[in-house]
Length: 64
View 1 (cartoon, rainbow, N blue to C red):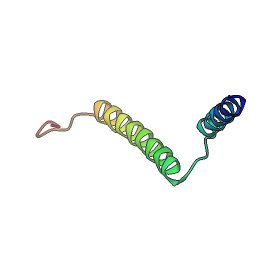
View 2: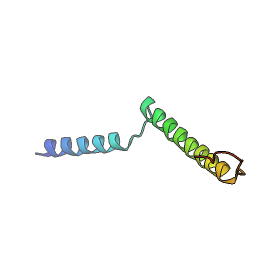
View 3: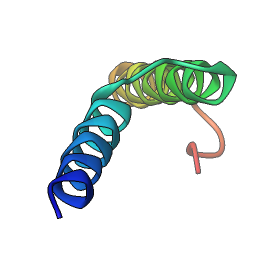
View 4: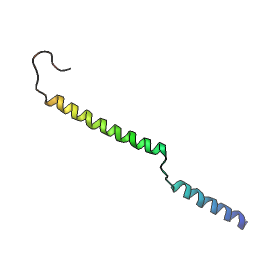
């Protein structure tokens, strides 16, 4: 019985340690790069929208 309990406890601690280990692999790095690229695109889109709003209207067709 003691052996079984010892095995269960050691297995539980190994599982906890494995879950807490957060080694970043290529998928995590790629995800971070995608997040950064998405943020940059949002900023660029906002800047472009602000530029369009601030641009003076020219004669002819209005901006659509």
